[in-house]
Image 1: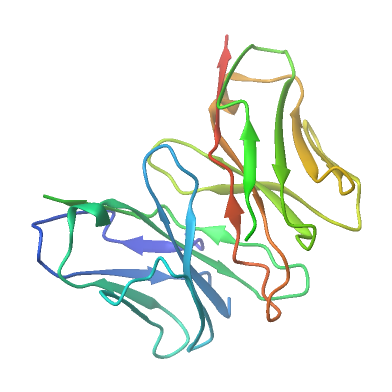
Image 2 (image 1 turned 90 degrees about the vertical axis):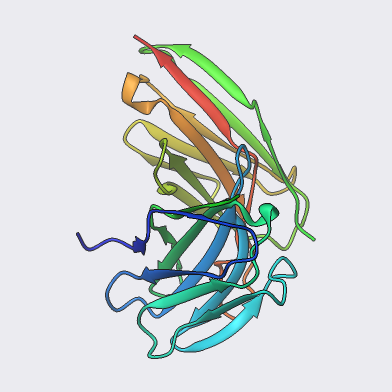
Length: 114
Length: 115
């Protein structure tokens, strides 16, 4: 499978715990995006990387959220001190960053905070 | 900031009929308009997109039209099949620092195609 891969698919945690998600983009895609989707809503942009540089962050990305892409390949999204409001689907997308940029999404990580 | 409105929220059609989903956007600087299909438990799948230098684009049974003056764009699916049943999202973005990837999504349309 050469698509965007996300792990784990599901994560259940207790409020206050830290969680980390991983995204492996399509090979050779230099841009990687994180989105969050809650039930009945469209995805919302969180942040994006071009290679290893984090170039844009949404105001939705509170201080408890941190994302990294250390070698310009896979990325991790960590949420510290989780809250019930963090429950959502966390989606990763990648693109080749060309003039006619197109985003390809993974299947997401469904987070449930109890 | 940009706001995207999508209608209808649900749409039920008979197999073989056409389906039309409409979106409006608020920021005239937006110049990229993709459509995604999302099936239960899966991520959004890009099905077609259009950029502001084009008024219409077609790919087999799917077509998208764009009216920049009115700031609206539409998805047309002809000869619908049961496997077209899913949630469809429109989105809009503008070029920001060389990236088109900060997509503003509509709230989605749940399409049901009855056999």
